[in-house]
Image (cartoon, rainbow, N blue to C red):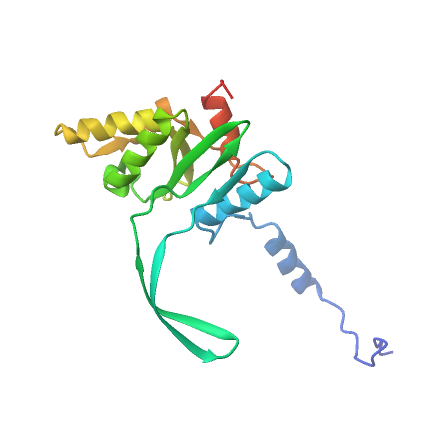
Length: 205
């Protein structure tokens, strides 16, 4: 006897082979951050913080000078040419528990150290100025090959930068991140709870 759905389509039962395949697929480990960029993960965390009134942190807009715009239709405009007006400072800033937060997100594929070439002089100068005013500045670094994340306080970064200017090494070893930074462990909500790591690192918060 043929069994049919209300729309007339014939019902075909799933055989055992198909069922076993599905069970195997279901048991495969999930990688929830696969395909996400570090910026995606931070943006998700910031949305969670904002929705739960934990903090107000946003990505800074990049200042650009628009030179040429075309209008393919009345309701649409397409920017064809634009230039950066001034060098950007850091990626993110905001307020957390009454403190000004300012940080930059960086990634490296290096397994043993973080190259200081990933940081720009104007970013160092900006974080120095913000720190001098009592702001809490840091780098949020992902070692992408290792899938490890660290909050690194700016004072440690600044020490490494000054040492580099004096002719010493041009990178921060992973061992220094493990010693002086705080590793951000994957959590459920948000997945990249970097403020929790920051609170652990800076008990004044």
